[in-house]
Image (cartoon, rainbow, N blue to C red; front, top):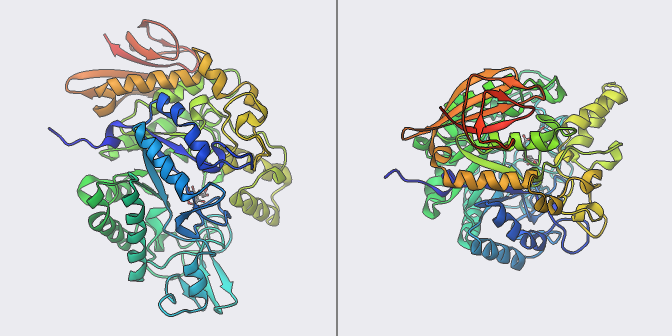
Amino acid sequence: MEERKWWQDGIVYQIYPRSFCDSNGDGYGDIQGIISKLDKLQDLGIDAIWLSPVYKSPQVDNGYDIADYKAIDPMFGTMEDFDRLLAEAKARNIRIIMDLVINHTSDQHEWFQRSRRREKGYEDYYIWADKPNNWGGFFGGGAWDFDELRGQYYLHLFAKEQPDLNWRNPKIMEEVQDILRFWLDKGVAGFRCDVINIIWKNDLENGFPSPILAGLKHYHSTPGCHAVLRRLRREVLDEYDAYTVGETVFVNEDQGRDLCEPHRKELDEIFAFEHMETEQVGVKWFKRAFKPEKFFRTIAKWQHALTWNANYFENHDQPRSVSRFGDDGKYHNKSAKMLATMLLTLKGTPFIYEGQEIGMTNFDFTSIDQLQDVESHNIYAIAKKIGIPEAKRWSMIKTSSRDNARQGVQWSDAPHGGFTTGTPWLKSNGNYETINYASQEKEPDSVLNYYKALIAFRRENEVLRRGSFKEKLIKGSVFVYEREYKGKKLTVLLNFSEKPQKVPFKGHQMIGNYEKKEFYGVLGPWEGAIIEVE
Ligand code: TEU
């Protein structure tokens, strides 16, 4: 019997806590809010929750700037609340996966404060230099800032309040192992590892001059990084049979394989980015029209590249998939379901991002002041500085801002979609009266009920959970692939357009977003179907 891990059969649901559910009316989602929705998540049929950071943090980057890895931020609740969440989730067979952010900390972390003061033992916790190099940061601008107190520059690949840890210092490995044990001892199932393939800097040489991330080569998927991953796994994670999925930026297939193929004993899975970048021109701020065919080819390529895939179309950094790859107007219902059909039938672990299961859409902001994201504001300011006209700046933000996915989850048609009884930290989306959980629970034909049906179908179907992947047709807006396990086969047919499409396949329909028993060879607008080919 081949050994199966829970995550090879399971489905993961991502919660971005500040936007999920507010229990106390302060405008921010919190842990009690999550607990109050666990029954709904169990009903949806998920196996694990990936919790974006809930640690103590000044929230410059919404918790991805951690000030204390072993404390819960008061905004989200207390450690007792967290322990209760773990227990309540466990009672429903739901595992909790924590977000592990170890490329950087907050500048408010005690380690950084001590390092600034050159306290003994802490001098080298971060990356300090007398002279900055030319590296650029992920949020735009340079990657170095001067610290008056220490009289030196420090490296920060993200916001200036997020100094990069110095992994060359063996103390960092010790500290992180201790943090891992702290959470694993509580009973968490594993970690989603933030920007994990850039933690180890080879050297601090200047990068080839480029407006985008000059210096990337010097810290991208380095041998040092692989060594860190192997040690974390061997010395801690394996002891707990813990699961890891790495957020791995800019990886090609070879680099991806080196980070997560089973024999490497590094990560269990990776979030590759290439399928999320097919409309990009260089950076995400410049986009061309979405071409489904390119998207399908990229997906298919990665399905073949890895033994096991982490499949996602959304997260807290990406625009909403129905607005981006589907049609959030006339075909909202059909296209959201079609995307669900794809997500849940690819080889690998499906990741659903909060709100995706009701087809939440991109934001409806009308001005930059309504946005909160540090990255959006940085980029907007830089664009202004280099003379990009206002209208263009706004369209860049509109299509690509991370706040697209950060509006409160729309639970009902109550004010602010029932996300909060107070004033939400980020303006709520005006479409909550038509798109919300409560009404979709009642409506048999809703996106939500389709997710539930598909998840249940997948749970009973080992071809979907375990089968191989083979593309059968990639043409224009049509994607057809076959899954096969022990001689049993299924075919998935998808139409990424509102134009009907003829395809050379017929058969008995098992499930799909158009109700029918037989599939006769024509895909309707935004149709997604799973059939047994005759
Ligand atoms: O994201 C890293 C990352 O590379 C991007 O997705 C990033 O969000 C940005 O959009 C690049 O343009 C991770 C987290 O998911 C993100 O929320 C954090 O802000 C970031 O790391 C820093 O911790």
